[in-house]
Length: 554
Image (tube, rainbow, N blue to C red; front, top):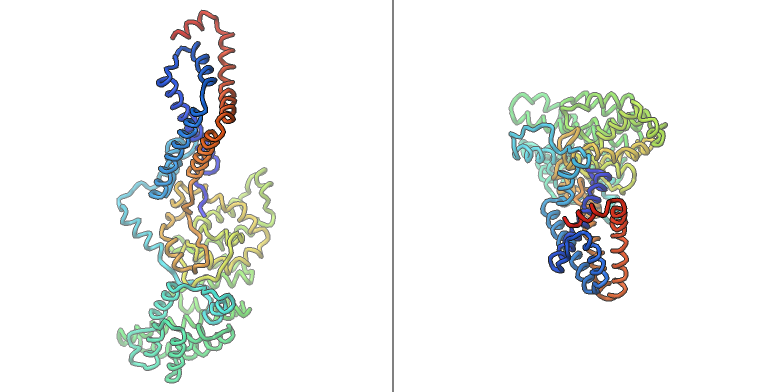
């Protein structure tokens, strides 16, 4: 979904320069042909007469050769442009026009980075790309049995990819198992169950574990995968909570007795936090939003160090549902910190709050006449900041692209994160009057703020180049992955292809209808040289005959 970083005006300037250069290049070769092959005299007084006589005596073969040569030149340029684009991802002509012609035409070159210190080299950029393409657990992921499986039953499509489910299996093994599980039969069974690929095998193993002991992780698995409704899942999670709290209290007393006990306590803590969070999400889905908010706040107070679960994003969504915008702002003030990794939820919620203050009275026509007020400028800057962080979100919020069920894992700044955000927050944007209109009028302006090329950052670090590959692994095949910046065909490749096709068509028509095309060509050349003939006549009338005679002899 790339937006042109040079802007329409810069593309228009480059198009004019390129067209003018191409036209005069062709005619330069034509003049060379006239001078060196036909030996046309160079005297000015004889040149126009000779050219006029020559044009009147041209045969159709000349026009066929001329248009064929032009088509050949255009074809060679097209082949070179296409090769350069496939190798470097950009148009050669566009790159030259931006780098060299744009400053001469009044453009500003923002391609120079503000920080010229490049001592870290490519290793730092590669390390940054790898860290930024880390896949995160979706804080608002749905329930497999009650939501994902129901979608499959209705549509016959699989909403989750194998890569996504494999990541979830790794998460479950990390958070729900420890080295001491072999000492307890039920936990040993569940340790194997999390590794099972077959859902029915996992469910059967969970039932087997419950026959041996009141196992919290077995209840979690059944609530996630066997329960077909949110109500059933909530009942199972409540049973898991009782078992999990007992295990947590016992391991808490023994956590300082050795490394094994500490690992077991860490596992029991993860299990308890997961259960309470999912119970809060069940309450939110069942319409008990205030209860869900209280459960999330209590959980964040009880376990303040477990920020990796991103429970604050669940809290923000629930508070927006309650329209408690002051509480939303308080949460943002705590978590919208430059030292913390940003998310689409943080950036777009901040933009929504600022847009809410001005969106109901915002009018593009009025703003263009009087300019933007301070509050409107703050809202626009917040939208630009959010769009730069994740440029995929606006098309989903503006319903320019269809939504799908969000995956269980997301990629920060990727299409998967945009889907996960828009799936839950579109209703909150619709609830604020005029917010989507303000977003529609301003979001594309972000790309004019980012230095060229588009991957470079303005408010954030440069956009990672590995998002497309990761998103294609996370999102199902029936979804068209949004790519930024999109490597679509540059304007000049399309322009050259059209020019080549046009000249080739002229050559074909001239070959098939030589007399008719000869008449059209002579008429076109006469019209083209009419201004020059008019200027020459005026010059002859103004200048003295003696001076004109001396000039023609030069």
